[in-house]
Length: 150
Image (tube, rainbow, N blue to C red; front, side):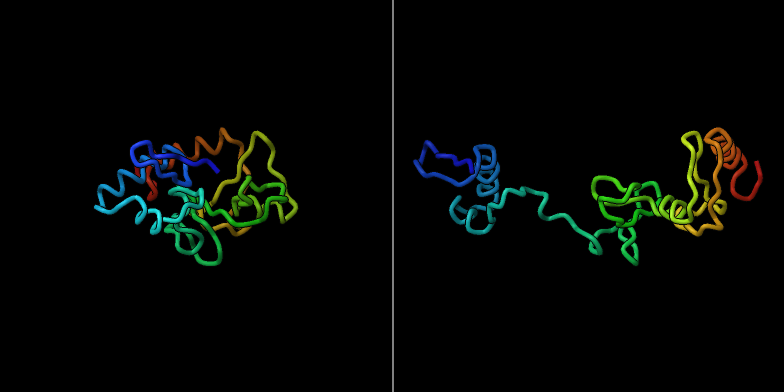
């Protein structure tokens, strides 16, 4: 582990130089000493990332262990060995439903939600479309609106 020696005081701290300056600024803002700050904030190497909301505490978490992406699709935990999984072990639920039914999607095709609800991943609500047909369908919906009016 990298250590940093403060040249003004001669004290040695169990973290890097950049962490030292961040903590020194924080100690000045709070009006406490560096030693008191070191006792209050443990040095575990995680930095700011240790305080993120996880799982059910996260705002995008849905019931049943489902995770809603920023584009409105549902991701579920399938494990890192699953063929559809990303590096974190999550996969899009509609693709998992489609592949578990024994169906495949060609490279130039995509899955379309018939009722336009991206969280409704029933097999009856999914259909395979070519990417060109899917794009033109959604462009027509954008032009006409959901009620079918221009």
